[in-house]
Image (tube, rainbow, N blue to C red; front, side, top):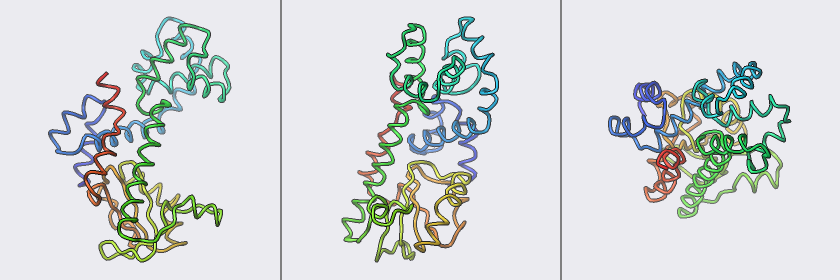
Length: 266
């Protein structure tokens, strides 16, 4: 995706309702727009959520005055499960207790809390247990597509799970041999079920890719939900791919895993 197009999308994507409007305007798959919106919300949370964690007394007070978790979430501009977690911590629950309660809201004895936590979970398409499950499913499916792609071409490879079991070190999702893509000799492939923004790419470059390049040589990263073309050429030893490189039928399955659409259409 052209960098200027991405910047415009990032600026104008603020809520699920924006996806359908921008989809027709920019001719981008809705699944890609969902990925950009999710990334924007996560970035906003990383940058600003400390302002909420430092005001837990005000959070408790607002709730005790009758404001629901969903209402507080909307007013403060953060996802409801995050607000629910902070509220429960302010009530004296430990991190483990909060995690268990969010996973099993029926365990609440207080009917109001039970009802509001359930609603928060049902509305949250980023930080809820269901959202995490969807992301895991997308990650797994992305790896499965690459796995089949390599197998059908007779490429010998080892998965990260197999390599870690033998060598006990962090590795890319796939270690390959005798693979050439677009003139690159590819020794490894990393699958990312997200949009490759410049910031995310830089973060993963420092955290993973640069280490993989040092250890294994030239490799490839697949950003399944497209990427900002500003990242191209960041490292001559890294090939960047997206969904358009792979068979459309397999990508369609991946793009059908859309929690935001599922939540907003029910």
